[in-house]
Length: 496
Image 1: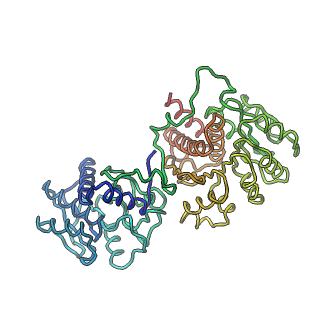
Image 2: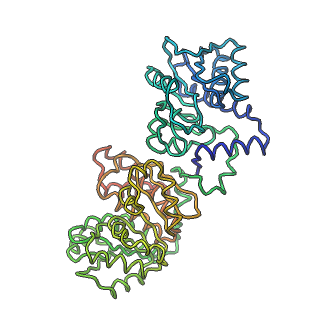
Image 3: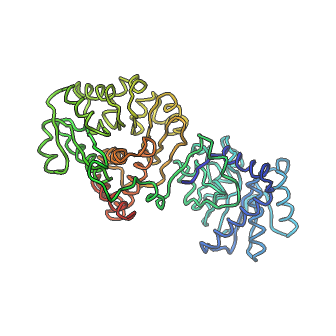
């Protein structure tokens, strides 16, 4: 795992490194500048004429140091100083003075010449106000230049906590982030402005993140083998869990199939689908490996029997919002004491029974998309997109459930746990049925004994990696939900 701190969290780590470990700020600044120069050279950018735009803070100090290191290599590096002399930090003032003594060209007005690379060191992670006036004019001028564009630590104008654009922002193709990529560089729209993000280790201690529940983390694909549940040579289908899928109202056999197939493909041992009678024949043809049980109406005794049989239950995929569907959901939440994944119509029905989230004895995993989360919280989609982490943590703080908030950046949260942010996946996955596959993927992992939070986070990540594999095969336009399952199978095959 790797951390994705926001601005305040990163400043705390920086202060700890300087104050407690005794590594001087100037040493960290020199290392930061070296990493930026290394990236410029490693990518073989045209460094014929480089402009570094510096502010007054330590981000500007990084920029002055970059200019000096390039100058020492014989590279023409000019500095546009956009800050204020009266606001210079101690380190930035020293770096500026050294650059001046070396004869580096430093000016305060927008230049007329053309540059091959424009490097943004104007504002750092501490920016919280809207950018306007001269600063906005400078950033917009930078964006207009026909040059390669690189940001130091974070693009100026991107909120390090939410990814929100603070009036205007620098549009980088590459962001070289110090020690950790900042959360705002991975949340949209900040990600669009950050471009490719690279974490450059410079010696800032990340130890203080371990006990901070507000710090987000993510996974990388190389970690998948160590995160998956183990499979023993001495095992049978019962070793990997019995899944109950309460899915599919009349005519929604596809949702049953997609979720159940995903559970099987993720490793579950036995899957039983409880669905409307009209779906029986289709499901038996599509997925003969599954047990199919059907209902014509609400049968509490039968549902209780199935819940006692199962090791995990998934409810909601294609379930509809009829009276029978509502009865099935309420019964499941009241009686289940096994992990319960609630998706799609299950979430829509849940809005009328929120008290059951607190009363249920089952470990609950909710998988809402933005509109479903809006119904659950009473917050608008715009509010959710503006500050999803705060709202998500407040929700899981009130309700004892794991919540996987689905979006282009899906976040998984639980009270008392650090939030997982998924960075895998792509826009080819924006197709009907994708959510059914995710619900089944999480359910399949839970069936094999993974914890509620771990299964949800790993399920989201595995589902997204499967989407990346599917896009390689089908392209951005033609991926179907069933291809995600095939992609997941490809990912898992690569872990053996």
